[in-house]
Length: 201
Image (cartoon, rainbow, N blue to C red):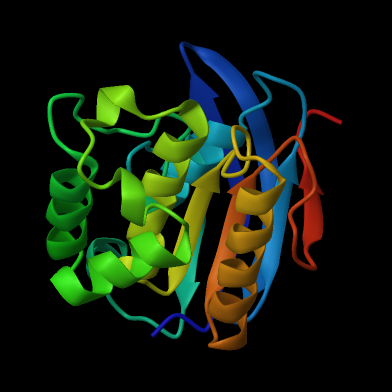
């Protein structure tokens, strides 16, 4: 169980360039933290450092209330990157079911997530035939189908229309109400109450 995510004096570099250093912040259960800043300021790299995909130069990522960091990252974190990560030759149904099962959910949960995000009619289409907004909805449906405690989201709302943003805002609010945490890299405001952490300001 993650009671909070704490960033302690974190420093991250990419391609030999320091993106940020001495970064400290905290997001508790039931809260959202929106990470803002210009392109190249390190928003995506911060998410990857929290997920364990990038080794910080210095500092520490702490999951309060949990004892084994690797186990938390394996079982309690869900990263949705800027790229949707969909295989173009699979149908939307096949891709969603694969991802849901990988996250520990079943077909019922996958279909419920698709319906929640308005994707039921598109499930028979190959993912390459989906619009950008539909692909993003499919990627986000994994969050609902196999919900984990900490959502790490990279520009989650970018290609969504107004309806999609409303649906995702409702899902985020429910996740937080159930004690979930959200750390999101954004340019646009999140559709839920969130504190802001600015990089490169």
